[in-house]
Amino acid sequence: MEVGVAHQIQSNDNITRSDYYQGIFEDNTIIDPLDGASNSIPRVAINYDIQPFNKFAIGFGGSYLFGESNDTNSDDAYKLTIKNAMSLYVAPKFLVSDTTGIYGKISYNFANSKFYDDNVNDSQFIMGYGYGFGIKSFVTKNLYLLAEVERINYGKETYNTADLANEYNYIFPINTKVTNATISLGAKF
Image (cartoon, rainbow, N blue to C red; front, side, top):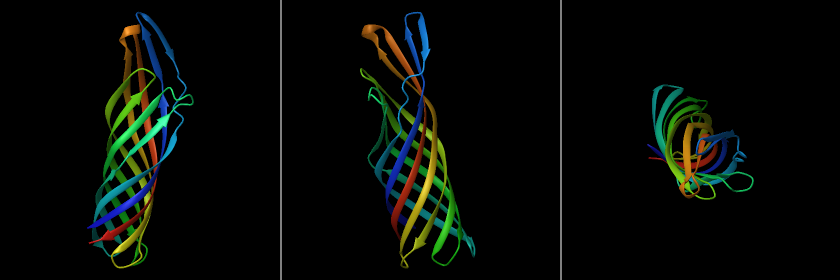
């Protein structure tokens, strides 16, 4: 079993479309999209490798991101926060030497998200899939370094920000996609 602690850079690119309703009047407009943001987030991962063949292994694992990732639009009127992000993954690995392997990764991801506008906010539990690749190299018998890139698509979620006092209801379908670049130091037990 392996446990790694990582420093992860996360980049968000969210596509936002606003549907605005007031009484029977409907105006379908595109709002200023969320700009995309880079966030630095600590991560812990647990992995277990099975090696059925000499140069091939399959890794099974999970990860958890501490902290939160934030994304806003240009005038900071809208904000999307992702926190408590977790993943379960399978990572087939080709061993290029006794100490180094390159791998692909397929993951199932889930997190809590919250969308804010000027007046109100709405929360959603989001789920999606991810794919990526990386390299892991042991620097000692039990200590390794890992570098990885992963793309996660959480899919489309709809956030409602109703302002009932003014009879407005804003609906924001947001297609959330995240790119992670991870550098990790880990230990094998």
